[in-house]
Structures are given as C-alpha cells and as structure tokens.
Amino acid sequence: MKASKKVIGSVAVSGLAVALMVTAVTGNQVLSADRTAAAAESQLVKNGMAGFSVVMNEYEFEAADYLDSYVSIEPAETNLVASSAQEAVENTPEESEEKTLSKEEKEWQDKLMAKVDDFLYVREKADADSGIVGKMYKGDRALIKEAGDTWTEIESGSVKGYVKNEYCVMGQDALKYAKKHCKTVAKVSTDGLRIRKSPSTDAEVVKTVASGEKFDVNKKADTKDGWIAIKTDSGTSYVSEEFVTLTLSTGKAVTLEEEAAAKKAEEERKALEQQKAQAAPVQSIAEESKSSGGQTSSEGKSTQNSPVAASADDETLLAALVQCEAGGTSVECMTAVGAVVINRLHSGYAGSIRGVIYQRGQFGPASSGRLEARLASGVSSSARQAARAALGGYDPTGGAKYFKLASSGHNGVVIGPIVFY
Image (cartoon, rainbow, N blue to C red; front, top):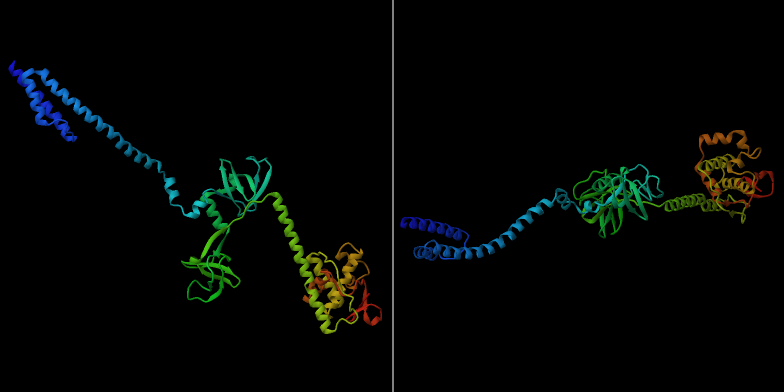
C-alpha cells in the first residue's frame, strides 16, 4: 500500500513537473516550481490523492487564466498575417501593371478610337437600326462611359451615343493606334526657344520662337536622344525635348448638324478665296494700263460688278478666248474682251460662259477652230490673269457687249487697238 502510494506520488510529481515546464516555455510564472512541487508532495503525504488534486486544481485555474490572455492575443497576430496574405492575393498582376503605367498611358485607360478608314456612325442606342446621332472620323477620340460586349457607350465633343466594338480600339490599343495614325504636336514651353538646323546645341539657329507656339513633329526624320524633329517653313528642324510638350492631335466626333454647318462654311470659304483670286489682278491691270498709256478713251468708264463663280475649265476657256482675240495687247485690253463675255452672260445671251463663247456667229475663234488649238497648246499667264479679273467683276469697258478694231472708226471705249461698245 505504501509502495503504491509512493509510486503514485512519483507519477503525480512527474506530471506536475511536465506542466511546470510547459509554463516555463510559454513564459508564464503563475506558480513557483519549488513551491508548487513541495505543496503537492505535502498534500499527497497528508491527505493522499485528494490533497494532491487540490494543489493541481489551483495550478490549473491560474494556468487557465494565463492561457485565456495568451489566446486572446494570438488570434490578433494571426489575423495580421492572414490580412497580409490576402492583400498579396488581391494585388493582382493587372493592378501591378497599372501601377507601372506612365501618365500618358493612364490617361488613355478609358479612351476609345474609331478604327476606320473614313468614319464610324454613333447611334442613339446600342442597336444597328437605331438613329444616327453623329460620326467619328478616323483620328477621333472618345471617352468610354460604359463598355459592353458588343456596343460601347461613348462621349466625344457634343456627341453622346453608342459605337460598335468591332470598329474600335480601346485603352492602350487606342494609344498605339493614335501614335501611328495621328499627328504629334510639339508645344513650346519657354520664350526664346532656339530652333536649330540639326540636333545639336552647336547647330545653326533657324529661328527663335515664343512660348505657346506649336509645330508638327516629323516622325520620319532621324534624330537623337534629347531632341525632337519638327516641321518648319524651312523644312525639318530640331528643338530640345526639355522645352516642348508633346501631345497627340486627335479629333472629336461631330453631330450631323455640325457636319452640315462645317461643310457649308468650307464651301463659302472656297468661294470667297476664288472671288479674291479673280479680283486680285484688277488693281495691277488698272495701274499697268495707266502707266503704259494703253487706256486711251476709257477714262471714267471702268466699273466693278459682282464676281461670277466659274469652274477651272470655264476660266481656262475664257482665258483662251481673250488670248485669241487680244493676244499681244495689254492685260487691260484682254480683260476688256473677257468683260464683254461676262456682260453678255449677265444680259442673258446664254446661260453659261461656255454658252456665250460658243454662241453661233459671235466669236470668230470659236467657230474657226483657233480657240480649240489655243486650249490644246495652253494659255499664257497674262491671258489667265485677264480672265480672272473679268470673272472678278472688273469691267474697263463700262458695260460693252461688242468690240471691233479701233481702226474701223466705230464709237466706243478704245483700249489699245480695240474699240468696245
């Protein structure tokens, strides 16, 4: 019985020692090892296993209190590790790539370009049968409002609508497309920038420009690091890239109304340019006539009428006629011949310049074949100048519809060897 009690005591104390070692490893100092062991042995001798159990229960309670606090800290540290691991998972390759994009590349992430040879319709709805609200021409850029699998909602200029994805490029593909198909513009960012003949600070200075001036970049020109090749009046020149800002010259979509208005404005501009070109010779012709004495009886007779719009073919035909009728005389005299044709047109002789010139029995060169021969061989610059002046409304005859040689003695306005009446 005593032997058994000793054996049990030895086993109990050994178990207690193990528990104390665990406590020591975890850094807990709930009970002193010596004090706990001694108390356990004393209780074991006096009260048997019941006394030993009391000591162990006390130890268990203290150890449990410690473990509660220990466990309460451990999950927090585990959560931190898990959180870091989750962030690593969530940091996808796409996000990592986005962080490495340049400022320009980031700007194009939500942009779209029309990948077409001419233009792309922008529709009211994501439907090929929907109404057309505008057009995106080649080189136009749009903001992506909402991308879909087949259609994308965009906004460009004053146009809002949908375009079909198969005719577009987006994001970085749009940027690459723009760099290939659109002009790159260099905007000067400092006053007094020297534009040089070659990419070197020792090169000849072509000219000096102010801040804000813009030049098209010559992408095909050879250059070197730190320099930009630009197009100038003198050809390809170079500027330091440090003093310019490069931008892609992209357009915006237009509504159908904006397109119609722009087309009308362009037609008006061309008509005005044509009128100016036709009227340009007038002053020089008058001055030439006065200085040479070619105008003999037309003082105070010249008038300025409304310009007549004419095609290039009509202008050439009129120039050929005046050269046939008054070639070798002054430009003033040839202009007078042209003015006779225009006066007849205004009077209703025929409905066109060609109709007036080829009217039966009126102009000899037209019926004899000399006019066609002149057209075939070409007209002189002075005859073309006279034709433009007549089309521009200049009339040195004062409204004449006929002419013949001045030697005939007929009354009228005599200009050179011809009298106009």
